[in-house]
Image (cartoon, rainbow, N blue to C red; front, side, top):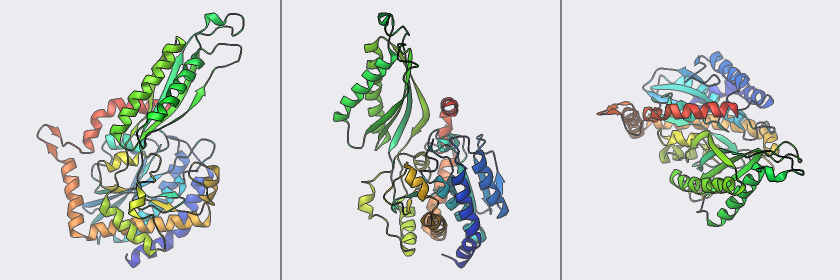
Length: 419
């Protein structure tokens, strides 16, 4: 770590904590994070970053650049919240830490041949903003992708589950539930049968596979046979291949519910599928060393895989670009993410410390990679391989290659905006 990094963080400390608290105070949902985006852009502009917003065709995404070195460091911010319980995933901490890392790196960007890029991505909780941006080429020139997420404990090499985000609509026929029930086709019964099938399926799930959901629409009145019901379900698995298998089996349960109740059904994808995190081992090691110097004790490497996070669209990014998504611990009195008590913990002194420690660790990780000749060459070679045209079009595995699915994903985006 260099003195300039620590000096820059010290000078920005009050602004970073204020940003974290301000985003927390006005939670906004997926694709509607207008105030949060404006607040983030304002801080970055005041510290000399060139801010572009909207970015990648998304009104609440932004890109902020400082420097013009060949090694482009992508530092990811998130700022969407959860319905009713606000920032119970601590995205206010994520955003402030990302801004802090960018500010910390700015004074040394020229010395280490860096372009420092803070990228704010909307709709992580639902909608898959990073996936849409990845497919549109917004990350093509990144050498590495870094971010940090708050949680009850420190995890340097955090992993996550692949996820499918589905909405299932059953359509039947309304009728008077007492006078003429025989004329109805009960869409709520279809949902019930489907849930029974899913419940029985649980006995036969592979390790790491999960299913959980809600009935978001179950009818309008007890004396009307429901003509429409909707279920929102998340399917998760340790790998994308395992998720595909689980999805096939779950779809059969939805179909069985419709068949049993004499209804029809429709399934739509609310968000693009989230892939599992693949953290870059070298970057994880560099981050681990740094947070240990700050007095933090991350989980041992052999225990990290046993505690995967839920799911994140950062997983898709790490399948294309070397990246990390570590968890930085805050004191939460036993509360975990997606609990109201955790939301309250995300504006405490412990969370403020996580903003600063996270920013410092991300900045230090970028410097470590930039100053290691072998790693610098590896990262730059990765960019060249992803962006060079192949003999028959785009290089396989490149970020640009993901744009082939853009028309389909645009449909996903429209659904996500409506949901």
